[in-house]
Length: 168
Image 1 (cartoon, rainbow, N blue to C red):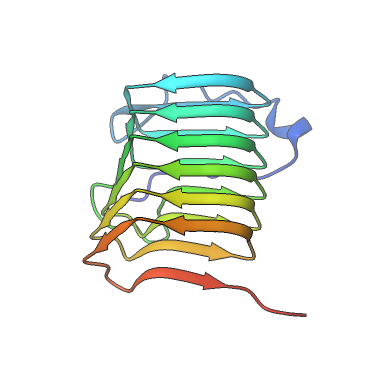
Image 2: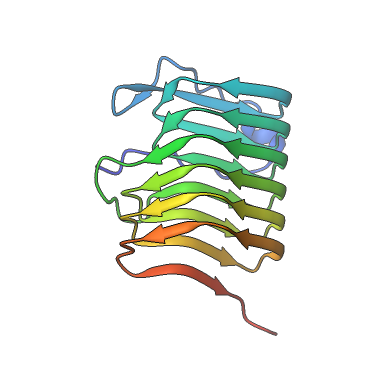
């Protein structure tokens, strides 16, 4: 089951799209925020949470299978459980791309393909999390100024932490 939502495009385009919470993934509602600022989402069980072009967002104490952070800044994800029912090829627990100042702290990740995956992000902090039974727990690709600290990683199928880039 890999029934997740994929967003891609510019702010002017994505802000014209409405994905309301009557849509569900694995029977749980979807939360979609685009061009939103200063939101605190506390509690609840969500099929997926999507942030596109958002600023100053806090996600706390939620249960979900995926959180997407796309071109967003000053994002905090903490005290949450991110797990998929079963390994999904290419499924991400937290997927951040082209974002800055993203903190993932005190969360639990399990049964994901990637627990936390960041692509072309700056100022990423992954701290005090629990990872188990994921294929790859933490992957950073072409990111800068990242801190990975005090995470508990066990039963990784492939890798615990993967950090890579290429020099051109």
